[in-house]
Image (cartoon, rainbow, N blue to C red; front, top):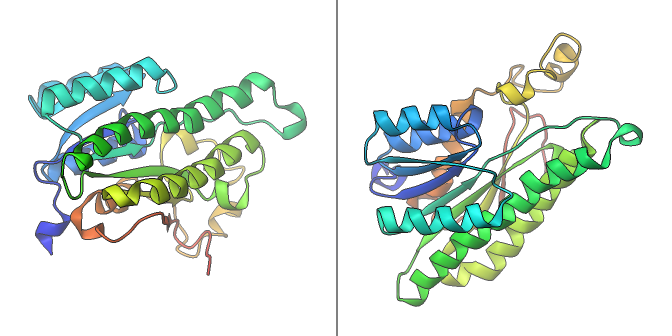
Length: 256
């Protein structure tokens, strides 16, 4: 069973890898034996990791909603490592505002990063994996889209974020239905409240008690607790899981 959970010798792209959930996924993937293409707008933390893990981490600095950046990163990663076995679409931003006050630019920025960005990387990596499948490879890889309970139950002050995260669930299921025949597994993870810089405001005193009261476990998730199910879905232990939305939320949202 330990071997099934391993990512030994796998090559994984992680977007939004400089902090929070993405950084935790990157770290756990490295511990599990993977090599990682680390993607983020903030290059400094990634370049430190590149130095710390020579030959196993390659930093790519850019905007995930730029189609040329996605395509070029995938091509360079394949040239460097020979293939891509996993993709974690994790990059995200927050531009909160009540619906009636939200500017169109706030809407567009969040949709561009979460929804368009996820599509671009899914497409670019998927094309590579399909080529390998057509060449005879049985199970060319796994894709994990990082969604949110906001996409399943809504979120006050974040209609842009909720809409994008809901869209990612539809994208996951569409890719799963189209690509399972190639042995490509596409799944989502839906987080509640993870203790990261992006959730700092809503974890503050104003909202803290009200939100914690809705979480049966009574605490926020730690980034490593978010990283574990992602790495599980990338591993061979999840070989028969396709098109699913895995809730990792301490009971914040429960579905039948």
